[in-house]
Length: 401
Image (cartoon, rainbow, N blue to C red; front, side, top):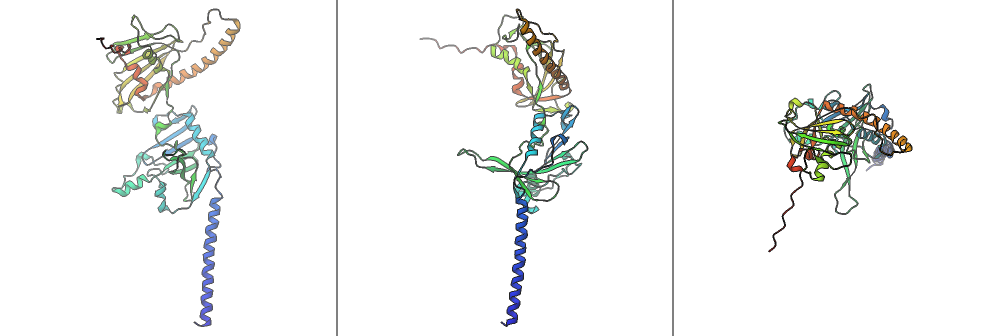
C-alpha cells in the first residue's frame, strides 16, 4: 500500500468515526430531551373547570359525558345523570398524571403496546358507524391491538387534551403467590406521532362503556311506613306496615307475623335501588313493564314511591320503572315532653333535612323518564309472595326411640 493510499484510508476512517459520533450525540440528545419529561405532568395546562365534554372511544364502544346547566349527563343513555364523583375523580387524576418513562418506537411496533388507533374514532365519526372490518385473522389482530381514545373538550368544542391509552403496565404483587397488579399504562398524548409515554396510573376508569359513567342511584325512600305488593293480575299479594319508624313490619289486617328479617328487607329495597344500566328505548326491548309486579311504599312524611318490576333482563337482573308522588311534610311533630331548647335544636335540624328532601324529590321525579336494568338482589325481597315472607319452617327434631 502506498503512502497516498494509506492517508486516504485514514481520512475515510476519520470521516466515518465523526459521522458515527454525530449520530450517537444526536440520539443521546434526543434521549435526554425525552428523559427530561420524567416527573412532569402529562397534561400541564388542563383545568377541570374548562372541561365540558369527556369522550371515550374504543374499537367497540364509546361514550360522551357532557356538562350542562343541570350537571354532567351521559348522551348515549338519553342524557341520564352521570356520576359526578366519577367525573371529578377522572379529571383530577388526569390533571395530576405524571410521566414516569418515555420511549420512541416505530409505528410498526405500537401494536404490541395496544396503541393502534381504534377504527371509527376520527373526529365526527361515531363508533357505531365504523367501516366493515377486514376479513381474516389480520383484522382481528388489529382490533385486539387497538387502544382507547380519551378526548377532553371545552364548551366550544375545542380539544383540551387527547390521549390514546394502550397496554396496562403490570408489576409483581408484594404478596408472594398473588397475581401481578396494575402499575401504570402506555399512553400516546396528542395527535402527533411523538414519543410513547408511561404514566404511573393504569387509568382503569377511562371506560368507554356508557353504563360505567351513570349515576347508579335510582330512588331512595326515607322512613318507610307501609309496603304493598300487587301482581300483574292486579290482585294484592301482601301488605306490610308498622306504627312508627324503627318498629318491625307486620302484615296489615292480619294477625300473621312475617319473618322479621324478610319484613325489614322489603323496606331496604326502597332505601336505595341501584342500577346496572338505563334502557333508552323500551320499545326495542321486551321489558314486561306493561304487566309488572307493582310494589308501593309510603313514607312517614307523606311521600309514596312505586316500583314496577318487569321481565328478567338476564339471569341475575330485571327491568324496572319508578315513580313517586306527594311532598315531604313541612312541619315537624314535636315529641311529648320536649323542652324548649330541644325544640329549637330539632326544628333547625328538621329544616335542613327538609331542604335536602325537596332536592331529593326533584331528582326522584326526573328518574321517571327512564326504564332501568337492576340487579336481582335489589328487587328479590319485594318479589316474594306472602307465603315466602313467613318464617321458614324449622326442621322437625328426630323422634326419640
